[in-house]
Length: 96
Image (cartoon, rainbow, N blue to C red; front, side, top):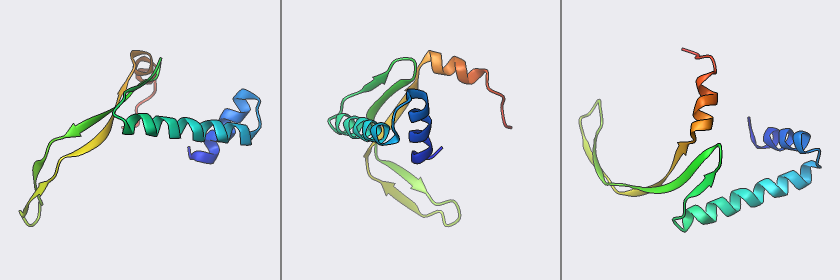
């Protein structure tokens, strides 16, 4: 699902104009981005938590050339799903 499809789906469920839903979604994304940039954790009940974590520097080895490269530390966003979401996903068929 892309951005436009998400807005259309939300607008249909909320019985609201797409422009209002688009503004709401953009504001939500901007607010979440600001909070994560400030190092705060964002929790959505029955969905999960987003938090910023630091990945330590590490040594990487290119598989074909065996050249070793030092990858510097960086900040990444981590998502931990809630138990409610985990239970809903457990019931979905697997595409193995």
